[in-house]
Image 1 (cartoon, rainbow, N blue to C red):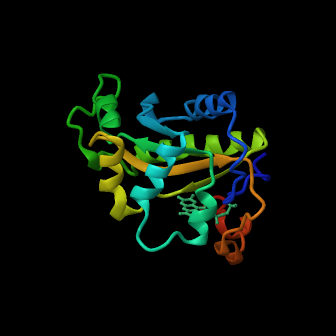
Image 2: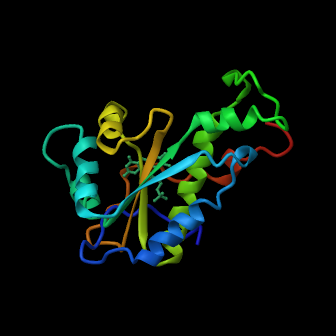
Length: 194
Ligand SMILES: Cc1cc2nc3c(=O)[nH]c(=O)nc-3n(C[C@H](O)[C@H](O)[C@H](O)COP(=O)(O)O)c2cc1C
């Protein structure tokens, strides 16, 4: 399943994601690990055409829809994965963790975003399992405000990315970035010391 996973960027617009598959994606997402079991994630599910169109409208960066957007826009399901830093600061202020000062410098990396990413990955893998395609992509930084307003996202939640899901279309394109090639294990793994 891991080796079969790849980002799918075109979808069959006539095949919706069955509701039970949609539920499984979300059930699996919340099986992701999280620091202190904080689970400071949230998922904005956009399944109806009007909701999905609103997503594309408010995140568009201007100009006519590019081919990427035309293909991605056919996805019958979008799930925006959000993270709450406050949920982690609150959780780690509890007695068993004891970081009552809620000092962010204690955090070597933002685990709230790490955990949201893990949840997104479980959705990507579940999609493979179910014979569907999916793609993770970011919400453009300059559109974050518009996105928040359009969907009533509270200030303490930040979108980490969006997962498009659907049955693969016929015009799928691989990312040009793949030409970079996969870095081999020997190059990225350091045994014992760097
Ligand atoms: C954090 C993150 C952001 C990404 N953003 C985009 C994006 O905006 N548009 C897109 O088409 N793919 C996006 N991708 C997918 C990558 O291009 C893709 O994972 C990479 O090229 C490797 O291809 P594969 O996942 O199909 O193996 C993103 C992936 C990650 C992990």
